[in-house]
Length: 497
Image 1 (cartoon, one colour):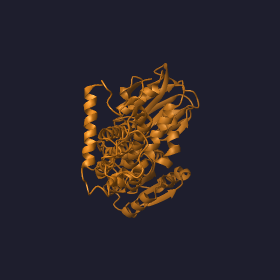
Image 2: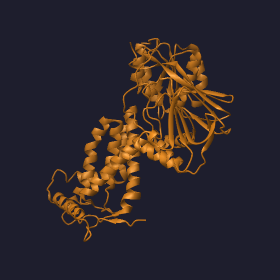
Image 3: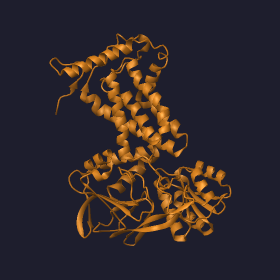
Image 4: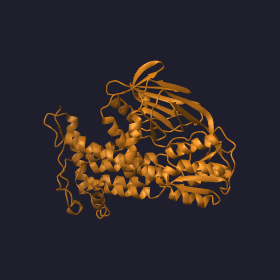
């Protein structure tokens, strides 16, 4: 193993460029120490202390999440996940691999010095890394929130030089590392910030100006109370049934008996149940997102109550594809994804943590835990030939970008199953993780992708886990997956003629 680097001072006989850079770094530090910044004296030291252990950013994330907008909550979760990855990298790799003493405090006025001096090494700046990671993570999901927080993040980073605890290069390196961590998290969990799928093919659906004829079933476990109240205000004639998760299937069946439009509020699993009922009863479906990830609703352009109420009022709807699977006597549908192999384990692990840390951080944590575990690949037959598979992913429609969680579909009625396979072999988890961070999974040498309307998978051992739309079931025989093109009518804003 190579020895630790020592940036305390340039070594005699070392490269001239390194000597010049260190000298410039020291001069910049001394220049900043000699400047008189009266307006900063009562602010920057306090701001620097408030960011200790990420407390400032956790409080900011809580305030943003309290705004109760879907994008705000996603941005807050992404910011926290980016901060966590940056802090982990700084503390496990950065400060342990580069030994650099803190600057000498003699040139720094006493009023600017921190009461408690850091005892860790100087390179890179953990505060700058956390600030940049949090602000960049916010901006990737919500440019408006990112722009609002950016001046504070910049001030925290600069406060580390102002108070004399870091050289400028420490701060620059920390900020670069933090921004890189945010982009790495985006690779693992793609953002929703991309062009919306086209609002087609248009479907004929009744316009409900006051909501009369809509019967909406809300899963109370998904934290839907605020959205239900907002829906009742926007559509006062709509009927809303709130129930516990175990009662959702029965209530949806009852609602379908009297509904002109069947509505649902909950996560992807609840939406899946409602889609199956609407498909079987021939009813249009109205989806109000209320769960952790809400992939289907977000791909429809439904962020909140205003989007759904507007579409219902104007009668704007589209026809979308539905995926259907059969395994032995078990049959089911999926509107988002179906998978075998490692992903069902990731779903179970994510659900364990989602209620504690939020959807995006739980997804990243689950991925890290599952990828680290030692396991044997899934054995299955594809095209009549046996294959060891680490992961089989089937999307209802082609996904634009893939990481360790699905990205977004640009066409919900393309007639295709997006089939992606990670082959068994040596260290496929590491290759998949590297490809997910870098971008699309198709960059992985262990990966293959194809778009087909139908898939047959034989030779799967009974009891193998299968995940569909966030739900987990056991395989009972040969698995057949097929597409039901344009089978379901769903309300969607912007689908008017």
